[in-house]
Amino acid sequence: MPDLHTSYLGCRLKSPLVAAASPLTGKLDGIKALRDVGIGAVILPSLFEEQITHERLAEQLTAVGVRSVGKPGGLSPGEGALSDSISGHSGAPSYAYGRSAEHYLELVRAAKAVVDIPVIASMNGTTTGAWLDYAQLIEQAGADALELNIYYIAADPGISGAEVELRFLEVVRAVCDSVRIPVAIKIPPFFSAPAYTIRSLARAGAHAAVLFNRFVQPDIDLDSFQVIPTLRLSDSEELRMTLRWIAILHGKVDCELAATTGAHTTEDVLKLLLAGANVVTMASALLRYGPRHILEIERELHTWLDDHDFSSVDDLRGSLSQVHSPDPLAYERASYMKALLNYRGPSGE
Image (cartoon, rainbow, N blue to C red; front, side):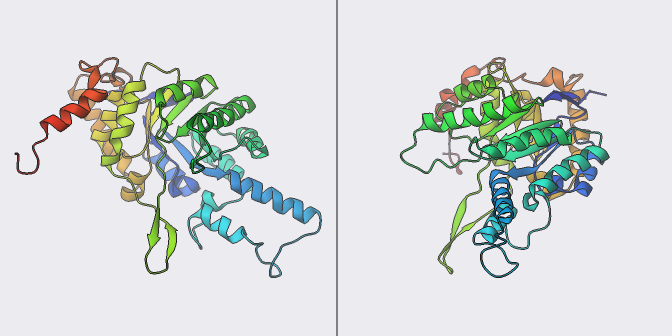
């Protein structure tokens, strides 16, 4: 039977399928269910910079005798809004997005105690503030690795692209310098020169690049005249940007490559592995179909590899990356021109 083992972030995984951060990985029952179906590793939901700084502010206020501002025993102004923005909505289930920083560390410790697969913690922030010392606490709690999700909207017209990249580099360097466990950086797709940026992040200490962060886009409610957050599960159509860039980057940057966003089927996973991904992370597919979806994909992976005479995932990886493709330009401008010139429309005209 073909070998599905792969390496990622200093760990030997029994499968290239990794559970991305989601409500499933934010509770022990979900983590154990994923372990039971053969997932390679789990990535816990993010601990947010805002959570840490908010809690520390509350501790400082308590230390000087200020319990809260507002109704007795109630939340201080902004606290409810912050809680809602982190958990997703009022009354959200108690998984890690809505937990305190200390509860997050408890989740890391508990997960490591009950499963024998790598547990990758996640942090989400945009600055090099004191919140980064939690990276060390996460390491001490037993996490095998850390995924750093820099979710930053460059909305200020006075900040250049170069300044945005510098901010990413500063945060990555600060985290990598503070811990001994491997660090992956989850990045957005909006850099003007992704290959250069990822190479720079690797030189700053990142062991892996996770391509790409999927931004939650706002919407406008025409009845309430309010801007509202929306969250829609991904589909396979969103796979192609990640596929292109992993294929371009494979063998050209000194870091591992993880694919995220749009992987739902066995075909999706195979395409990403052929492009050069070390692992394929999944969230929407697991939320849509449940953990047992992993069993079906891994069974079909074994069959496909066997039918095509591949003895392992390692043999397959990167076979159709740009450096190994019989048509390297297919990943660049040539594919754009070919697609337009060959398009015939719905009627075939």
